[in-house]
Structures are given as structure tokens and as C-alpha cells.
Image 1 (cartoon, rainbow, N blue to C red):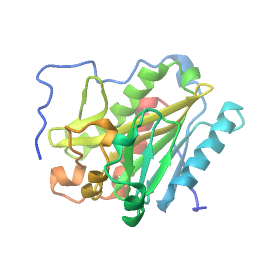
Image 2 (image 1 turned 60 degrees about the horizontal axis):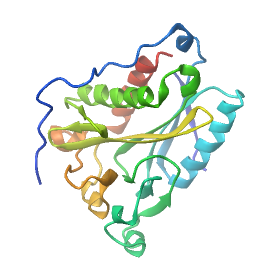
Image 3 (image 1 turned 90 degrees about the horizontal axis):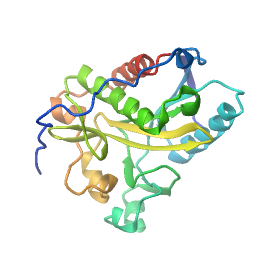
Image 4 (image 1 turned 135 degrees about the vertical axis):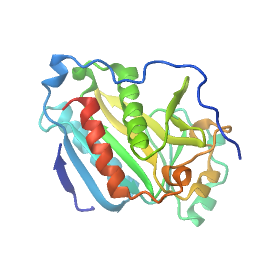
Length: 246
């Protein structure tokens, strides 16, 4: 298993013509502020998906049992397609043997959503949080994750926004952030993925999140500047901490 680094802590889219739901994070109560500080684990290099999946479930059991603090895992993956609970075979545009030939693994997992691709150049965040104790609710939790990605993108010169009924973060060039979460006994796992500088051509292997109309995009492709993963990861940690108030 990869060594852990621990820290505390094609077409253009039109931006929504009128203000949508408030983009600010859900109101945080004093009870939420009093929860234990979230531990941040960064997995160096590229992490096999199966290892990160196993780590999430192990940490989840510890958080459920109150034997360890809530945790945020940050990593990059080798190329992998995951199929959520709502995914059908139509989410894959090639067969499994073609995926293997392209060096892409395939897993069916317990998160919500459909087909998603993880790959180098994409920052993946797995928060293991007591959503129930934080009194966020699933919608509030998803909104807070979206807000984290929106603010991180903004700090690198990309304006992100939401589209009603389509979880994730979008830009005028395409989708830059995906979400797929799961809850077990009130604790979250799986999470969010923000495209920094991935090979966008690999998304042609799937129908990302079941949406055939909106293309994937990334911070680097939009700005024309190669964004460093370490810089984006640091911005994500700070923004996540600000939004989740720990």
C-alpha cells in the first residue's frame, strides 16, 4: 500500500443567465464547529483505486465507532472507470477488454451516480465525515463539496457554477468537477474529483455521469496554464477547511 502523508488541518456551455441557488456553504451551527478536527491524508504519487477504496472503508468504520477522527483523503489515481449504483451498461462506450487494452481498470462501487473516470491530473477527494452529526443532510453536504470545488477553481482563474439537477461543477468550457457520494450509518465516503490537467481524450470511453451533452474540461485546458497538482491540493485543503469549519 502507498505510504501515507498526514496533515491536519465540441461546444461551449452558457453560464446560467440568472442567479441560481445561493452558492455559499450551508449555515454552520455551534455544534458543528465543536466536532473533532478533520485529519487530512495525502497519498503520494498515483494510488491504485482498489487501495483507496479499501482505505476509505477502513477509516469509515473507525469514524462510525468514534475510534478515530473524521478524515479527508486526497489522491490521484491510475486510470479507472467506476460505475455507481445508478450506472447501466450504456455508460460504457467500449467493452471491458478495450478498457484493459487502454490501461483502464473498471469497478462497480456503492456510491451514487453513473460512470465516472479517474486518472492522473485529476485531484480526487474522499471525505470521511459524520454528515449526520454535522446536521448537514445529504443535499447540504453535496452543496458544500461543490462550493469547495467552485472556490478552488476560482482561485486558479476559472469561474465554476452549478447546473440544477446535474450534480458537479461546470464552466463555460465544460464540466470540471464531478461528485459521487455514499453514506453509511451517517458517515460519508467516496466524494469529489476536480480536473486539473488530465488527458481529456480518455473520457471518450464513457458517458461521464450519464450526460452526453456536456463535455469534460479542466483548469489547465481553460486557462492555458499548466496548473501544478501540489498547488491545487494545497488550495483544496484550505478551502475545504474553511467551508467545513474545522
